Length: 401
Image (cartoon, rainbow, N blue to C red; front, top):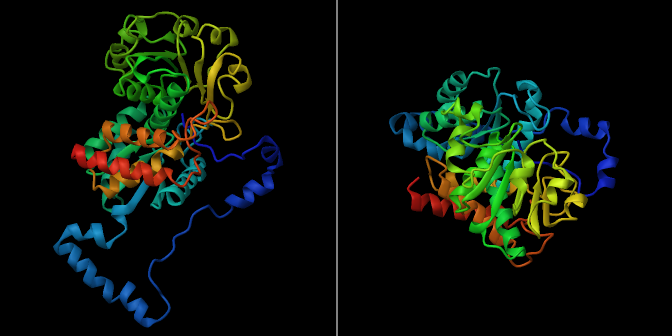
Protein backbone atom coordinates (compact mmCIF):
# COMPACT_ATOMS: atom_id res chain seq x y z
CA UNK A 1 0.00 0.00 0.00
CA UNK A 2 1.38 3.37 -0.98
CA UNK A 3 0.26 6.65 0.59
CA UNK A 4 1.71 8.73 -2.18
CA UNK A 5 -0.62 11.00 -4.11
CA UNK A 6 -0.15 14.02 -6.27
CA UNK A 7 -3.67 15.26 -5.79
CA UNK A 8 -5.38 18.64 -6.10
CA UNK A 9 -5.72 20.63 -2.91
CA UNK A 10 -9.51 20.88 -3.09
CA UNK A 11 -12.42 18.93 -4.45
CA UNK A 12 -13.40 21.57 -7.00
CA UNK A 13 -9.95 21.28 -8.61
CA UNK A 14 -10.28 17.50 -8.59
CA UNK A 15 -13.59 17.73 -10.43
CA UNK A 16 -12.00 20.06 -13.00
CA UNK A 17 -9.45 17.45 -14.11
CA UNK A 18 -10.20 15.97 -17.51
CA UNK A 19 -8.93 12.89 -19.35
CA UNK A 20 -7.55 15.19 -22.04
CA UNK A 21 -5.50 17.14 -19.51
CA UNK A 22 -4.19 14.02 -17.80
CA UNK A 23 -3.27 12.12 -20.97
CA UNK A 24 -1.68 15.20 -22.53
CA UNK A 25 0.59 15.57 -19.50
CA UNK A 26 1.73 11.95 -19.80
CA UNK A 27 2.13 11.81 -23.57
CA UNK A 28 5.74 10.93 -24.39
CA UNK A 29 6.43 10.16 -20.73
CA UNK A 30 7.25 12.48 -17.84
CA UNK A 31 11.05 12.18 -17.85
CA UNK A 32 14.01 13.22 -19.98
CA UNK A 33 17.80 13.25 -19.62
CA UNK A 34 19.77 16.51 -19.75
CA UNK A 35 23.50 16.87 -20.15
CA UNK A 36 25.46 18.49 -17.34
CA UNK A 37 28.26 19.54 -19.70
CA UNK A 38 28.18 21.78 -22.79
CA UNK A 39 28.00 20.14 -26.22
CA UNK A 40 28.20 23.22 -28.43
CA UNK A 41 31.42 22.66 -30.40
CA UNK A 42 34.09 20.10 -31.33
CA UNK A 43 36.09 20.76 -28.18
CA UNK A 44 33.02 20.06 -26.04
CA UNK A 45 32.46 16.79 -27.91
CA UNK A 46 36.10 15.80 -27.48
CA UNK A 47 35.87 16.31 -23.72
CA UNK A 48 32.44 14.74 -23.14
CA UNK A 49 32.87 11.90 -25.62
CA UNK A 50 35.69 10.64 -27.75
CA UNK A 51 38.65 10.93 -27.36
CA UNK A 52 38.53 12.50 -23.88
CA UNK A 53 36.10 10.03 -22.32
CA UNK A 54 38.55 7.19 -22.93
CA UNK A 55 40.91 8.65 -20.35
CA UNK A 56 38.19 8.50 -17.71
CA UNK A 57 37.27 4.94 -18.68
CA UNK A 58 40.92 3.85 -18.44
CA UNK A 59 41.21 5.50 -15.03
CA UNK A 60 38.09 3.71 -13.74
CA UNK A 61 39.41 0.42 -15.09
CA UNK A 62 42.63 0.98 -13.13
CA UNK A 63 40.81 2.25 -10.00
CA UNK A 64 37.11 1.20 -9.84
CA UNK A 65 36.47 3.60 -6.94
CA UNK A 66 36.64 6.46 -9.45
CA UNK A 67 33.26 5.35 -10.83
CA UNK A 68 31.72 6.88 -7.70
CA UNK A 69 33.04 10.33 -8.53
CA UNK A 70 33.25 10.32 -12.32
CA UNK A 71 29.91 8.75 -13.30
CA UNK A 72 26.38 9.43 -12.16
CA UNK A 73 25.89 5.89 -10.82
CA UNK A 74 26.65 6.75 -7.19
CA UNK A 75 23.85 9.36 -7.20
CA UNK A 76 21.37 7.37 -9.31
CA UNK A 77 18.38 5.60 -7.75
CA UNK A 78 16.82 2.69 -9.63
CA UNK A 79 13.03 2.74 -9.13
CA UNK A 80 12.10 -0.91 -9.58
CA UNK A 81 8.69 -2.54 -9.93
CA UNK A 82 7.12 -5.68 -11.34
CA UNK A 83 3.70 -4.05 -11.50
CA UNK A 84 2.01 -6.46 -9.11
CA UNK A 85 0.60 -3.98 -6.55
CA UNK A 86 0.29 -0.60 -8.27
CA UNK A 87 -1.48 2.07 -6.21
CA UNK A 88 -5.05 0.84 -5.79
CA UNK A 89 -5.04 -0.85 -9.19
CA UNK A 90 -3.49 -4.16 -8.16
CA UNK A 91 -1.56 -6.44 -10.49
CA UNK A 92 -1.57 -4.48 -13.74
CA UNK A 93 1.82 -5.57 -15.08
CA UNK A 94 5.15 -3.92 -15.77
CA UNK A 95 4.23 -1.66 -18.70
CA UNK A 96 1.14 -0.26 -17.01
CA UNK A 97 3.18 0.49 -13.90
CA UNK A 98 5.72 2.60 -15.80
CA UNK A 99 3.80 5.91 -15.59
CA UNK A 100 3.79 5.54 -11.79
CA UNK A 101 7.52 4.81 -11.70
CA UNK A 102 8.19 7.82 -13.93
CA UNK A 103 6.22 9.91 -11.44
CA UNK A 104 8.29 8.52 -8.59
CA UNK A 105 11.48 9.48 -10.42
CA UNK A 106 10.12 12.98 -10.94
CA UNK A 107 9.51 13.25 -7.17
CA UNK A 108 13.08 12.12 -6.44
CA UNK A 109 14.38 14.94 -8.59
CA UNK A 110 11.99 17.63 -7.36
CA UNK A 111 12.26 16.90 -3.64
CA UNK A 112 15.62 15.16 -3.19
CA UNK A 113 17.66 16.55 -6.09
CA UNK A 114 18.47 12.95 -6.99
CA UNK A 115 18.47 11.45 -10.46
CA UNK A 116 16.63 8.18 -10.80
CA UNK A 117 15.59 5.78 -13.50
CA UNK A 118 12.45 3.62 -13.65
CA UNK A 119 13.06 -0.09 -14.24
CA UNK A 120 9.93 -2.20 -14.71
CA UNK A 121 10.55 -5.91 -15.03
CA UNK A 122 8.58 -8.56 -16.90
CA UNK A 123 8.99 -11.14 -14.17
CA UNK A 124 7.46 -11.73 -10.75
CA UNK A 125 10.09 -14.30 -9.76
CA UNK A 126 12.02 -12.96 -6.77
CA UNK A 127 15.29 -14.65 -7.71
CA UNK A 128 15.09 -13.40 -11.30
CA UNK A 129 14.58 -9.82 -10.08
CA UNK A 130 17.53 -10.16 -7.69
CA UNK A 131 19.73 -11.57 -10.45
CA UNK A 132 18.72 -8.77 -12.83
CA UNK A 133 19.60 -6.04 -10.34
CA UNK A 134 22.86 -7.71 -9.34
CA UNK A 135 23.88 -7.67 -12.99
CA UNK A 136 22.86 -4.02 -13.35
CA UNK A 137 24.58 -2.93 -10.12
CA UNK A 138 27.36 -0.90 -11.84
CA UNK A 139 24.64 1.37 -13.27
CA UNK A 140 23.05 2.72 -10.07
CA UNK A 141 23.77 3.68 -6.46
CA UNK A 142 20.55 2.69 -4.67
CA UNK A 143 17.33 0.74 -5.22
CA UNK A 144 13.83 1.98 -4.45
CA UNK A 145 11.43 -0.97 -4.66
CA UNK A 146 7.91 0.09 -5.55
CA UNK A 147 4.45 -1.44 -5.93
CA UNK A 148 5.47 -5.07 -5.42
CA UNK A 149 2.90 -7.36 -3.87
CA UNK A 150 3.12 -8.94 -0.42
CA UNK A 151 4.42 -11.31 0.80
CA UNK A 152 6.91 -11.43 -2.11
CA UNK A 153 8.03 -7.89 -1.36
CA UNK A 154 9.46 -8.97 2.01
CA UNK A 155 11.54 -11.76 0.52
CA UNK A 156 12.69 -9.57 -2.37
CA UNK A 157 13.85 -6.73 -0.15
CA UNK A 158 15.68 -9.08 2.20
CA UNK A 159 17.47 -10.88 -0.64
CA UNK A 160 18.45 -7.63 -2.36
CA UNK A 161 19.84 -6.16 0.85
CA UNK A 162 22.07 -9.21 1.14
CA UNK A 163 23.02 -9.33 -2.54
CA UNK A 164 23.78 -5.64 -3.16
CA UNK A 165 26.34 -3.37 -1.52
CA UNK A 166 24.12 -0.29 -1.73
CA UNK A 167 20.99 1.13 -0.05
CA UNK A 168 17.77 -0.79 -0.81
CA UNK A 169 14.33 0.18 0.48
CA UNK A 170 10.79 -0.85 -0.37
CA UNK A 171 9.06 2.51 -0.06
CA UNK A 172 5.54 1.11 0.23
CA UNK A 173 6.74 -0.47 3.46
CA UNK A 174 9.22 1.87 5.03
CA UNK A 175 8.34 5.26 3.56
CA UNK A 176 4.80 4.75 4.80
CA UNK A 177 6.03 3.59 8.20
CA UNK A 178 8.36 6.57 8.67
CA UNK A 179 5.65 9.13 7.91
CA UNK A 180 3.11 7.34 10.10
CA UNK A 181 5.53 7.46 13.04
CA UNK A 182 6.23 11.15 12.39
CA UNK A 183 2.52 11.94 12.29
CA UNK A 184 1.79 9.84 15.37
CA UNK A 185 4.52 11.69 17.27
CA UNK A 186 2.71 14.95 16.58
CA UNK A 187 -0.75 13.54 17.24
CA UNK A 188 0.33 12.14 20.60
CA UNK A 189 1.55 15.59 21.66
CA UNK A 190 -1.68 17.24 20.50
CA UNK A 191 -3.74 14.80 22.58
CA UNK A 192 -1.46 14.99 25.63
CA UNK A 193 -0.21 11.42 25.40
CA UNK A 194 3.20 9.82 25.63
CA UNK A 195 4.16 7.98 22.45
CA UNK A 196 5.36 4.88 24.29
CA UNK A 197 2.07 4.46 26.18
CA UNK A 198 -0.22 4.41 23.15
CA UNK A 199 -2.47 1.47 22.34
CA UNK A 200 -2.33 1.19 18.55
CA UNK A 201 -4.39 -0.87 16.11
CA UNK A 202 -3.00 -1.29 12.59
CA UNK A 203 -5.58 -2.44 10.05
CA UNK A 204 -3.81 -4.23 7.22
CA UNK A 205 -1.05 -6.79 7.57
CA UNK A 206 0.49 -6.46 4.14
CA UNK A 207 3.63 -4.57 3.19
CA UNK A 208 2.71 -1.23 4.77
CA UNK A 209 0.92 -2.61 7.83
CA UNK A 210 3.75 -4.86 8.94
CA UNK A 211 6.33 -2.12 8.36
CA UNK A 212 4.22 0.36 10.35
CA UNK A 213 3.94 -2.14 13.22
CA UNK A 214 7.69 -2.78 13.13
CA UNK A 215 8.68 0.89 13.28
CA UNK A 216 6.19 1.60 16.10
CA UNK A 217 7.63 -1.29 18.11
CA UNK A 218 11.15 -0.05 17.39
CA UNK A 219 10.13 3.42 18.58
CA UNK A 220 9.08 1.99 21.95
CA UNK A 221 5.33 1.52 21.50
CA UNK A 222 4.74 -1.93 22.97
CA UNK A 223 0.95 -2.25 22.60
CA UNK A 224 0.49 -2.71 18.85
CA UNK A 225 -2.30 -4.94 17.50
CA UNK A 226 -2.45 -5.96 13.84
CA UNK A 227 -5.65 -6.77 11.96
CA UNK A 228 -5.99 -8.56 8.64
CA UNK A 229 -9.06 -9.80 6.75
CA UNK A 230 -9.39 -12.71 9.20
CA UNK A 231 -9.20 -10.60 12.34
CA UNK A 232 -6.59 -9.96 15.01
CA UNK A 233 -3.17 -11.45 14.42
CA UNK A 234 -2.08 -13.59 17.33
CA UNK A 235 0.13 -16.62 17.71
CA UNK A 236 -2.78 -18.96 18.49
CA UNK A 237 -4.71 -18.26 15.28
CA UNK A 238 -4.62 -21.54 13.32
CA UNK A 239 -3.51 -20.13 9.96
CA UNK A 240 -0.66 -18.20 11.64
CA UNK A 241 0.43 -21.10 13.84
CA UNK A 242 0.52 -23.28 10.71
CA UNK A 243 3.06 -20.99 9.02
CA UNK A 244 5.61 -19.99 11.69
CA UNK A 245 8.09 -18.61 9.13
CA UNK A 246 5.66 -16.03 7.76
CA UNK A 247 5.89 -12.31 8.49
CA UNK A 248 2.52 -12.44 10.21
CA UNK A 249 3.71 -15.21 12.53
CA UNK A 250 6.87 -13.23 13.32
CA UNK A 251 4.77 -10.15 14.12
CA UNK A 252 2.45 -12.25 16.28
CA UNK A 253 5.43 -13.01 18.52
CA UNK A 254 6.34 -9.33 18.87
CA UNK A 255 2.96 -7.60 19.00
CA UNK A 256 -0.44 -7.93 20.70
CA UNK A 257 0.93 -8.11 24.28
CA UNK A 258 -2.58 -8.43 25.77
CA UNK A 259 -3.27 -11.51 23.56
CA UNK A 260 -6.41 -10.02 22.06
CA UNK A 261 -8.42 -12.33 19.78
CA UNK A 262 -11.38 -11.63 17.54
CA UNK A 263 -12.02 -8.85 15.06
CA UNK A 264 -12.08 -5.04 14.82
CA UNK A 265 -14.42 -4.61 17.78
CA UNK A 266 -12.15 -6.52 20.14
CA UNK A 267 -9.03 -4.80 18.79
CA UNK A 268 -10.42 -1.26 18.99
CA UNK A 269 -11.96 -1.54 22.47
CA UNK A 270 -9.92 0.90 24.56
CA UNK A 271 -7.50 1.73 21.72
CA UNK A 272 -5.94 5.16 21.40
CA UNK A 273 -4.92 4.95 17.74
CA UNK A 274 -6.26 3.43 14.52
CA UNK A 275 -3.91 3.24 11.53
CA UNK A 276 -5.61 2.05 8.35
CA UNK A 277 -3.38 0.81 5.54
CA UNK A 278 -5.85 -1.47 3.78
CA UNK A 279 -9.11 -1.12 1.91
CA UNK A 280 -11.13 -2.46 4.86
CA UNK A 281 -13.73 -0.02 6.10
CA UNK A 282 -13.84 1.21 9.70
CA UNK A 283 -17.40 1.13 11.03
CA UNK A 284 -18.65 4.08 13.05
CA UNK A 285 -19.79 1.71 15.80
CA UNK A 286 -16.18 0.57 16.21
CA UNK A 287 -14.93 4.15 16.46
CA UNK A 288 -17.14 4.55 19.50
CA UNK A 289 -15.19 1.79 21.26
CA UNK A 290 -11.91 3.72 21.18
CA UNK A 291 -10.64 5.86 24.03
CA UNK A 292 -11.63 9.51 24.38
CA UNK A 293 -9.71 11.93 22.13
CA UNK A 294 -8.57 9.08 19.91
CA UNK A 295 -6.32 9.34 16.84
CA UNK A 296 -7.48 8.00 13.47
CA UNK A 297 -5.20 7.65 10.44
CA UNK A 298 -7.35 6.44 7.53
CA UNK A 299 -4.69 6.17 4.85
CA UNK A 300 -6.24 4.09 2.08
CA UNK A 301 -6.34 5.93 -1.26
CA UNK A 302 -8.42 7.19 -2.87
CA UNK A 303 -11.12 6.09 -0.41
CA UNK A 304 -10.15 6.30 3.29
CA UNK A 305 -11.21 3.50 5.64
CA UNK A 306 -13.55 6.03 7.24
CA UNK A 307 -14.48 9.50 6.01
CA UNK A 308 -12.76 12.26 8.01
CA UNK A 309 -16.06 13.94 8.90
CA UNK A 310 -17.28 10.69 10.45
CA UNK A 311 -14.01 10.02 12.28
CA UNK A 312 -13.98 13.58 13.62
CA UNK A 313 -17.13 12.87 15.65
CA UNK A 314 -15.04 10.68 17.93
CA UNK A 315 -11.36 11.36 17.23
CA UNK A 316 -9.34 14.38 18.31
CA UNK A 317 -6.90 14.00 15.40
CA UNK A 318 -7.75 12.62 11.95
CA UNK A 319 -5.33 12.09 9.06
CA UNK A 320 -5.60 10.61 5.58
CA UNK A 321 -3.35 10.03 2.60
CA UNK A 322 -5.17 12.66 0.57
CA UNK A 323 -4.23 16.28 -0.01
CA UNK A 324 -7.81 17.57 0.10
CA UNK A 325 -8.11 16.92 3.85
CA UNK A 326 -5.90 18.17 6.73
CA UNK A 327 -2.92 16.08 7.83
CA UNK A 328 -1.87 14.38 4.62
CA UNK A 329 0.40 11.45 5.44
CA UNK A 330 2.40 11.20 2.25
CA UNK A 331 5.51 9.13 1.51
CA UNK A 332 7.12 12.03 -0.31
CA UNK A 333 7.89 13.48 3.13
CA UNK A 334 10.28 10.60 3.67
CA UNK A 335 11.82 8.78 0.74
CA UNK A 336 13.70 11.60 -1.07
CA UNK A 337 15.56 12.58 2.09
CA UNK A 338 16.12 8.99 3.23
CA UNK A 339 17.83 8.05 -0.03
CA UNK A 340 19.68 11.36 -0.29
CA UNK A 341 20.96 11.01 3.28
CA UNK A 342 22.03 7.41 2.72
CA UNK A 343 23.90 8.30 -0.47
CA UNK A 344 25.47 11.42 1.08
CA UNK A 345 26.79 9.24 3.89
CA UNK A 346 28.03 6.53 1.55
CA UNK A 347 25.86 4.04 3.44
CA UNK A 348 25.57 0.44 2.27
CA UNK A 349 22.30 -0.10 4.16
CA UNK A 350 19.23 1.83 5.31
CA UNK A 351 19.01 0.83 8.96
CA UNK A 352 16.16 1.05 11.51
CA UNK A 353 18.04 3.90 13.20
CA UNK A 354 18.09 5.86 9.94
CA UNK A 355 14.33 5.40 9.54
CA UNK A 356 13.71 6.54 13.11
CA UNK A 357 15.91 9.58 12.49
CA UNK A 358 13.88 10.43 9.40
CA UNK A 359 10.59 10.19 11.31
CA UNK A 360 11.88 12.39 14.14
CA UNK A 361 13.18 15.00 11.69
CA UNK A 362 9.79 15.20 9.97
CA UNK A 363 7.94 15.43 13.28
CA UNK A 364 10.26 18.17 14.56
CA UNK A 365 9.37 20.44 11.64
CA UNK A 366 5.72 20.52 12.71
CA UNK A 367 6.35 21.30 16.38
CA UNK A 368 6.08 25.10 16.18
CA UNK A 369 2.62 25.09 14.60
CA UNK A 370 1.39 21.80 16.05
CA UNK A 371 -2.41 21.43 16.17
CA UNK A 372 -5.11 18.87 15.50
CA UNK A 373 -5.04 19.89 11.83
CA UNK A 374 -1.25 20.12 11.55
CA UNK A 375 0.68 17.13 12.83
CA UNK A 376 3.18 16.84 9.95
CA UNK A 377 4.54 19.44 7.55
CA UNK A 378 3.18 19.74 4.05
CA UNK A 379 4.79 17.50 1.41
CA UNK A 380 5.59 20.76 -0.40
CA UNK A 381 7.43 22.28 2.60
CA UNK A 382 10.96 22.97 1.28
CA UNK A 383 12.50 22.29 4.72
CA UNK A 384 11.54 18.62 4.76
CA UNK A 385 13.98 16.91 2.40
CA UNK A 386 17.08 18.78 3.71
CA UNK A 387 16.10 18.02 7.33
CA UNK A 388 15.52 14.33 6.61
CA UNK A 389 18.72 14.14 4.57
CA UNK A 390 20.80 15.58 7.39
CA UNK A 391 19.21 13.38 10.06
CA UNK A 392 19.59 10.19 8.02
CA UNK A 393 23.19 10.94 7.09
CA UNK A 394 24.05 11.59 10.75
CA UNK A 395 22.34 8.34 11.81
CA UNK A 396 24.18 6.44 9.08
CA UNK A 397 27.51 7.77 10.29
CA UNK A 398 26.67 6.84 13.89
CA UNK A 399 25.43 3.40 12.82
CA UNK A 400 28.41 2.75 10.56
CA UNK A 401 25.88 1.74 7.93
